[in-house]
Picture (cartoon, rainbow, N blue to C red):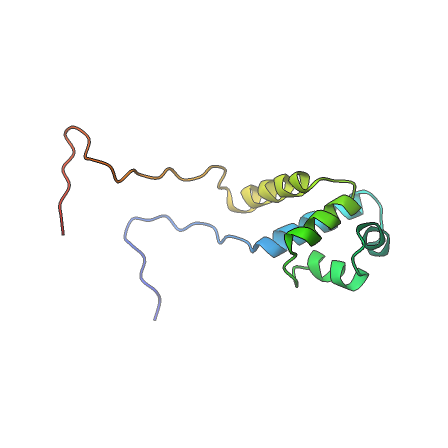
Amino acid sequence: MLPLRPAGRKQRAEEPLWRDVVGNVLRRERRAQGRTLQDVADAARISMPYLSEIERGRKEASSELLAAAARGLGLGLADVLTLAQEEIVRLTGVATLPTRRSVSAPRQGEVRLAA
């Protein structure tokens, strides 16, 4: 049995997992620099097998490990996060945060029904 969706809602592209996006960003940046896994792992002081797992999206990197991997690539954490955001936008097509409706008093002319 399929889960029910409210009528009229557009189906969004499936959102990627954070660990996959971050791993892809780290791998892409490492390859763009022409560096090996071992070279970046040594610079970041992370084991090479663990960095490989992060790049493949098999492990969820802690903030400390993510910052170390970024430094190992000569990037800042903000650089990696920005690249990850750009990747998510590219994959999902969603570039902005949805606006949240306030639960304040009704606007003039607005009618609300109580349940």
